[in-house]
Picture (tube, rainbow, N blue to C red):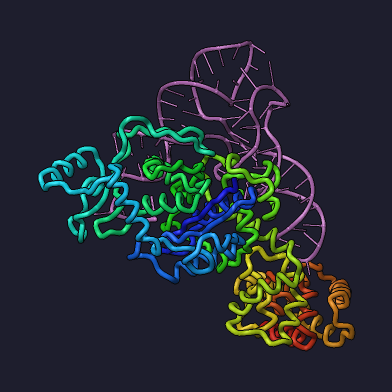
Length: 475
RNA sequence: GGUCCCGUCGUCUAGGGGUCUAGGACGCCGGCCUCUCAAGCCGGUAACGCCAGUUCAAAUCUGGUCGGGACUGCCA
């Protein structure tokens, strides 16, 4: 039997990292088992669902490299499908469940509602748990599931093991709202049945909903899928990762200059490992080794610093042309304009030494800025620390003079020329080069100096040495 | 409050009765290298929540306890 898995994002926001991680695990298992991976758009909340969010979520999934199988689910864009297209089906099931006695119309007299409200208060439960909010319109015909009280609801979770709920702890939950729209529980369960989903891997926050889904599935006369409840992702405060934490949507990671392969790798490591030793691995290796039953039970704290380290690993491992292509948008953003074709050549030239020093793509923009724009102002701390030292004017003068007449303008030639000069001046290499760095790049932190000068060009380099010199007192 | 889930270095994890004086990775600290910054290399720091029980032997099994989390909506 081929496995069939799905991810069901709701288009009420951008793709959340928690959802992305769940998508990743579903995708890994589907690919590992040569199964099917479906994307379903859970847009039963009409108020908050938007087309833009839907498009963004699909784009994020593609960015992460999670491809879904088109042609299995249809009706939505790009081989996905939307629950909003299946309203009739959900209503039909709800009616059938009422007919079979598995569900009932909620229609309680006012005094009974009041006593329920008081009971809810006493038990510390949300009042709406028993009664609809008065402000809700058209509430006459809500349909609730009736929970069979004869036996505990038990299931074997691939990750948790055997989980059991007593029926009296499961409330009669609404499956069809008063306005005729399905709730999440109904829509999701009906779809899992209709699309013959074999494995439901989702966040542990849905563990308490699982008995509801099982009751529903059985009432439809079907057997439930295999469940695998993934450990939650926590923010650094130890709470479930939610919108209140910063950077919870996948697009922020793309925008901050993270590589999809790195994010994929990092997310896969949250709750799972290849062998306990391997840290860096690609999609194929993950697909090869992945088992849902190997997923950890413990919640995982999202650690941005490890992700950043990993991103650096991936950036350094890329072919340089790929790095240039990935970094270009961030260079453009840094400059606020496009690069000319001449400037593109300069970027290609400097790229290797910048690539080594880049952890997040925007850093590449900062590093190469000095190549494409005049130095409007020097970094204040660098100037203070380096340029106010004694002997700096003489160093800059001598360097400018020497480089002005240098014939072979290459990093190697510049290096030997300047090293020889500093030896003549009896100035240490470290001490002597820093003023030049500040003069040429505007900061005491920059790509390697000789490469920087070589790419910048002879006349510009000499000009910048002289410009900085003019700002210093005459000796 | 009730129900359910979870507890190995600060963080992600390996481990599932002896090979564990607990391994790997990030971070942090120190050193080397070095034109700055990175990278790289070397070294260090640091954990089985606690208490019982089973056993010749427990991080591993059992019970309890403490702690954390999720859910408790006509949101998903």
